[in-house]
Length: 351
Image (cartoon, rainbow, N blue to C red):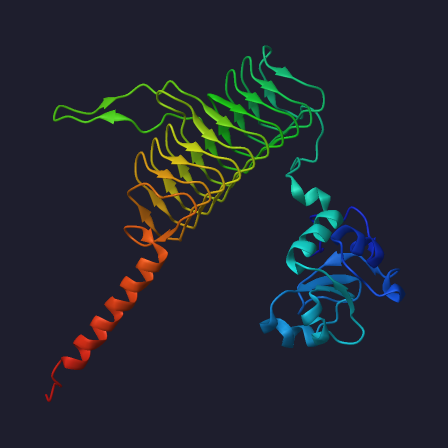
């Protein structure tokens, strides 16, 4: 079996260029050395660059065969003599900067068909596509849809009537989008459903009456939505995903939810209808938010927490039900102590 290169390199870098990109320092004698790839310390070889940002990886660093390593000054002494040290303030951030320069094509999904233009897609005659749109085989673009130049529509994706998608965005294979306005440079990974009915019913003993969902989904510039997510359209106001927000795989966002700018929402989180996340909120994996909850700006919720009430700006909460982290930790410690005491008091079984 052949060994394909799925993500081609954009260019090689000298260590002098690496230092310029990262604001780092490198010995003059090493500035001309070439970097072709990125790799972890234990896998790196000649022409690879790695990073060291924590002392507990020092033993691995001492055995690395990397060409160079991005490292803080205090940890540089752990590198073997033949490894060029690029001294930086934040090694991992610098490593990401180098990786982005080496692999620019990895920053945004491209056509899986490696096509250009409309390659077997079904485009309604009333749709409006700017020059430079790519649509892979099987994609469907509905009437009056508008798509900006440089955007890629994946195979078998469906873009519904009147949907707007900005420039240089990427819509993954099998994604279905309706009732939505999507900005520039937005990435929506495969298998998402955006703009379908929100879950709204008036319950009763004679059956459940469906509530019309007449709002939209608005996804602002530079947002990214992971594979398998569902974003319901609003019922009586729009569902909004703010500028620069990053959403992991398999997240459910209910109707009327408002998510601010530059939030982070990790996998399998569920956000109930009419909740609000202010800017820079972080939700760990599998967090659950009840209806009409507000999470204040910059607040962080620990993984596998359930939030029933509003969270103040800048707070750190966790648990079920969620509460301030220090209180949560004290409660867990107290419960553990009570359990140990109960075990210690239990009479020995002499049978």
